[in-house]
Image (cartoon, rainbow, N blue to C red):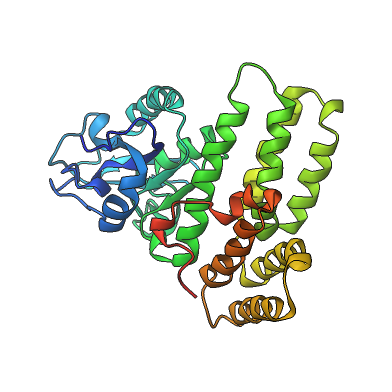
Length: 322
């Protein structure tokens, strides 16, 4: 089994074939170079192959989904052998096991009848196929862990989707650390929220305001209710993409904290760089690097503690594209 052997790393679930394991119906794999070679050094993978683990074997008859889109059956392509009930029993047991791992994300194999996150073929009785289904494993996992960041390996080729997914993975890991404690510590939650303000603003100004109001009244809400509402709003906000317009707003917001420390030339230089980013002439890393220089120089504590400045390892270079 291929895993990253560092217990300090964030754990994410993944379809085993994407790590190069020979678990596909034809005995092959779908090793993903980006996932293994680029993300691998920063994450601990928890591989799952539902079809092998349910007992189908390698190599094996390929399977497909048939019937209704929202409750399809999984059957063999040639023999028609029905694996549905066995898959349902397996996934309930496996999902209970995964709860112990405290996963911060999951990467599925696209189009798979077990692992496909969306647009999976479902065949009618006439043999007609429509891409309206979800894999039996993927659907159950998303239902069990509705806030968990999930993505398909094919969609990670889109730079904006890739960045959004990785941001959510690292933020969700931090969220788990704050809320997965026996005792409800309001001070720690307020500290967490304060550190993520600008990240939230970059993804959803609307949710940023809603969460601010929620935290302001934290002492008036039952801990369990607060935790449920905060986690849901937080992850819903981050699921929305950070656009150049929203990022520009955050950059100007940060600039406001520096104005009294900068001379006219320095201010104009920063504003010109932010404007170039807004016009998509330079990547986000350019104005951010400039701002981080002055934030560090003048020790602006509030900004230094913002997760927005370093939401993921810089080696991933997710902010280096226009």
